[in-house]
Image (cartoon, rainbow, N blue to C red):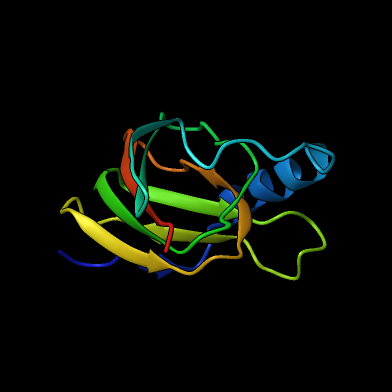
Length: 126
């Protein structure tokens, strides 16, 4: 397993991200992913699938978690305007990739690639 590689955000993708931030500034928080696949007292396992051009709900990661990325070529993160965080794009290798992400971020996930993005997210409850 490897980790995604963060790349400079191409101008056309940055324009789309900035436009989304502006147009959706008042959006309420939604779910962190599409659906829960498993939950017990230690973890909650979510599934997320985004087609090219699709964005997730605005969501906050209240717990530490691991992303296990199974499919995709490019994925972006769009923090809300005024958060002090920059938009980013990660290039995915096509191999299974895993990333630890600490609690605290709020963002929209944006499939800015040409392939379907598919991941499992493991939230650590303890």
